[in-house]
Length: 137
Image (cartoon, rainbow, N blue to C red; front, top):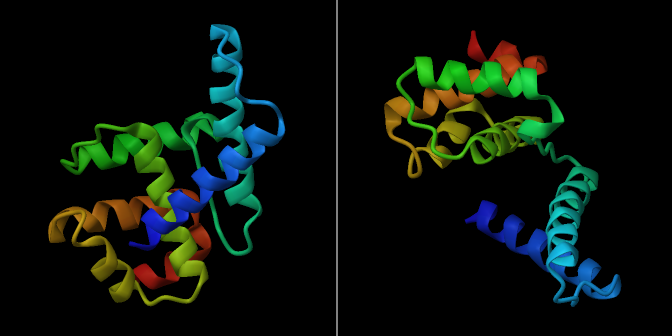
């Protein structure tokens, strides 16, 4: 639910930014530029929100490739690389906020199987927020 609210807020902020910048052009090249701007604006807005970590494959392709390979090696079906990497940021943000590992696991279990949540959490911590590796011990 929180993720949906956060993504909705990002969408609204992006739409407002595009409106302010005249994003209503119907030209194809303008539409492509607008889409790229929306993506950057969404990441920038979220990245500057206090206490949130937002990751995308394009930000660090090598770390993303390692994280995605880890998930797949642990029998996780990843259909959207950017979403999986973004979820790593959400896991790190939850840990940054002081949530205990059990609570993070419980929050992600409805979206992932009980067994599937651990590779996402372990992969996120070891690759994107190693400052939280102590919770794995």
